[in-house]
Length: 277
Image 1 (cartoon, one colour):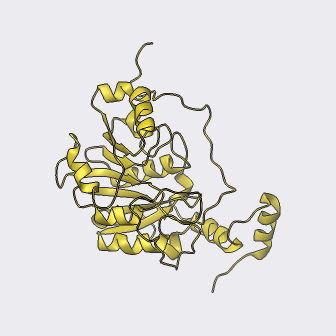
Image 2 (image 1 turned 180 degrees about the horizontal axis):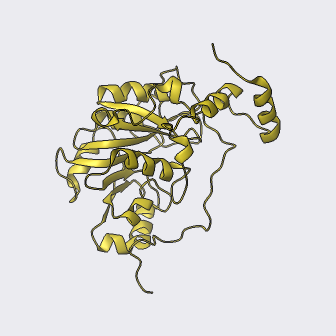
């Protein structure tokens, strides 16, 4: 039985004004964060949407890197993405974006790293049926290549696309989950190859559904971020004793729409490999 300090939770509710989806999740998050193996305390934002930059950095501090290669899709113009910051640390990789307008912006805003062949951009609308073919079009990767990081955020068919991927072998996978659903509930939106998010709760999959899928693909859930937006999975052979042991029920964060993490000064261009004028 949980030993919950209800007086403490009541104070928090009064202080913040909004408690998303119940006090219990805030209590469990605070308790989990006391462990040095938890990932939430390491989160910070430079170019990620929330605190994913810091969590990704901490994961690779624990397991190390190999080739510093990434693939991310659903990046919009790339300025706010999970892999933008990695370009400053010498990483290279592939971005896939369905909007031609955003791809044009990427080609302008990230011109220096693109010119140096550190970033490849493909304008493709992703489905579970074409994802591996899209990977094969890249000049950076070959079949069965091991890469350090795969980041998936397409606001809908994320579960089905990850399930379909067999072209590359990522060491770490970041996937957006639907934080509205509690951690013991396995739910996945019905597949729709033309799906585009309408800002409703009809998108993606619950954390439990993604955890179940990760096991079939040889990964283990190692954490989620405080905003309840992204789940982090590490390939099973790399986990060892470096992360908290637990499933969705132990590592869940709800979608906290009242919690914002900001970084100073809005980005206009990629500053990695910047050039004069």
